[in-house]
Structure formats: C-alpha cells, structure tokens
Image (tube, rainbow, N blue to C red):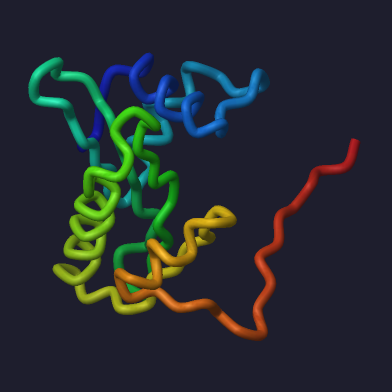
Amino acid sequence: MRAWNTEEIIALYQNAGWWHSGYLVTDIPRILEGSFSFVIAVDTRTGTAVGMGRILSDGVSDAYIQDLIVHSEYRRKGIGKKILLHLLSICATVKIDWIGLIAEHGAEDFYEELGFSRMGGYTPMIYHRKG
C-alpha cells in the first residue's frame, strides 16, 4: 500500500493517542511512501480503515514494526494479529529474520504470543532535540 485517505490514517493515530498538534497532515503521504511496507485493515461494510501497521527496513538485513494500530471499536477481533502476521510474512518473503518493535506497555503478551520476546539487556531510547 502506498496511499490511503489521509484523514482515516490521522483518525487511527488520534484514536491510539499517537497524533500530536505539531504533526503535519501533509506528512502522511510521505510516511506511507517512506515505509518498506504499509498495511491497512478495512471494514468491508464501510470501506474505512480500522487498523494499520507498517515496516521500516532497508529490505535486506533487519526490519522494525511501526505504528501497529487497531481502532478501539475494533479491538479484540483478531485484526491486530492479522495485520502483524501479514507484516511478518512480507519480511519472510524477502528473508528478513531480524524484526524488532517497541511494544506499548501492556501489549507485551500480544507480541509474545506471536513469536516476539523481550530483549534483555537492551533499553529503548529516544532522541530529544535541544533548542
């Protein structure tokens, strides 16, 4: 997937609490285009996006699962699992075996059930630009 309705993508980010006022609507197409792969789950009755996930990767050595979101009204229906399994199958197709992600607190069991494990001895970190 290389394009989708920008408002629907923003609605998913907002529902997850991941959209901030400083983000630009015009960045959404660039986010999709810059991803190694981008997957959308669609409610077939309405045609609207109810979930998404993407892969950041060079396509060779490793990959990161990013922005796995299912709208709160659609959770606990297996949608997130289907999105994640599809993303993993894309990685398998190009023989990427090192796949990482940062799980939101409380979601660890979901990922562990699908083959992920905690990386003991490592600490997720984030850069904060000064000034």
